[in-house]
Length: 347
Image 1 (tube, rainbow, N blue to C red):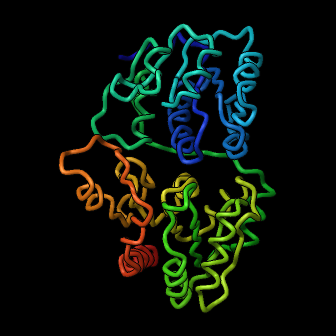
Image 2 (image 1 turned 60 degrees about the vertical axis):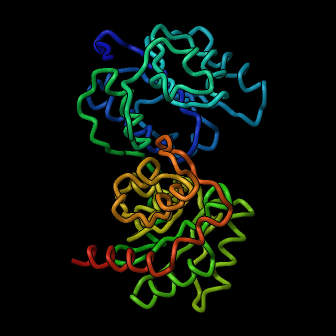
Image 3 (image 1 turned 120 degrees about the horizontal axis):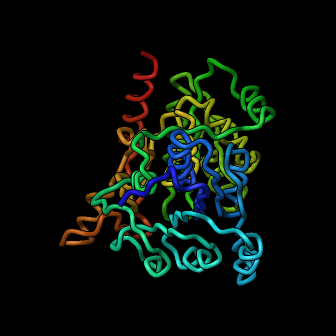
């Protein structure tokens, strides 16, 4: 299904969360903008995610603040009162997003194909993107651009960063510095690697002439993990966890030489900046959620784990369950990937 975009003047995009997913969505939005720069685009987005993308050009944002509970739906309807869009891109499979979409008036409402349109999404859409058997999340999103007739689906990113934040990062990491940035924490503790193994990689990087910086958000989980990594490390590390805004972190990731991270937002932020990422995966399929331009550098135990947990073939994207799966990622595997990538970058 492809629509004639020349007949469309206004488009509403519904993708509330999370950081990694909105990074993928930016590539789709900018693929549409390259072909049709005059199209009026409104993006309904989460409060935190907005802080990363608020300077995006050619996009008007409407914030959906889920912390307001049921009032968030009333406030969204109020913010969009009187607006009717030619097209809605309903890009989030979640009951919260399905309910939020009821506040958006649009003639054409595009959702995922029937297999993926869960949580009631299929009830609130009237068009579907093409089915995809084994897509990365980014490729799934690009299906929405394709449905609008866009043919250049190569992912590119231009996420504007305030000059002050760029200067902050450049002062922190001057050009020519070799630096490993470790964004150690995922949203759930079970998806985090062991602090002593992060520390061992940090020590290895330092012995190879790298500065090592810990980065992340201000949550207690992230701060505690950073402290545990430093405690396990025999050499001092630069701890920036909780000390940067999202746009400052984006600028820091651009200055980095290599990023090491589990399945977490900063890994995908680094991809948007062209910085190679060593991704650590056990619970989710890196073919679906890995750092898109660095899939060759992923260290994953997902496949053997999922094959152990399921005797029959599983649906694409099925998550593995368990609180200690990340312990199966061995230190030697990660150091070998770091050495391989470091060597490639020095050539």
